[in-house]
Length: 114
Length: 112
Image (tube, rainbow over all chains, first blue to last red; front, side):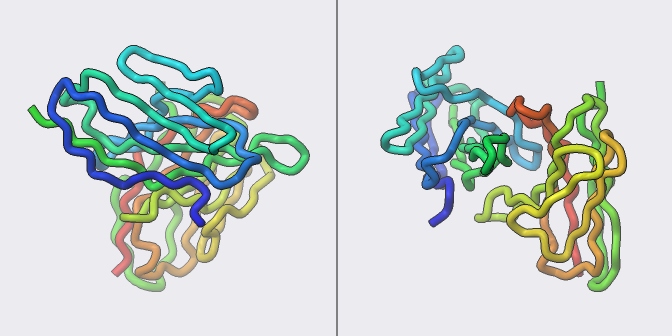
């Protein structure tokens, strides 16, 4: 089983729509959680971290459910410029407690149409 | 403010050729890593380094070598290119203990 799983999409939505992405992770030792955004033929860039209490950044809301090993990203009032691939990322804690490497999901493609 | 710089941006190799993908960062980051991205596979870790002189293997290390002689540079070497190494390669860096990773713009490699 892949360590981080996402619905590949694509999600095709009209401008102004609310869209939700889900992600599950298999390793309960996962330590930190993020959403990255990747535009077509570009490098990934950090969108936001995900905290247990849930966090919001403008139109974007991220939530984490450690018990279910589930992460979500909600985008409200979608804009054309939100069109991109959204990557769910987890970091495992290494043996000894040091930070591990980023483990990426395959990404969910979003296309926002006029 | 250069960030993470990768060269070249595009490369075509013949099977069996060797080459080095360059990666440099000017943020004094301890962590550096190399990923490859293939359609339907997502980003997969090739090699990583937690500091100068220290490297380790990731998920897909076969066919690649790395070294980290300085904090700034982390080159990736393809010893004998194979068509299966056709991919987009990304270098990333971050501070130890700080998890925001900065990526280079990528190298699109085709092996024919």
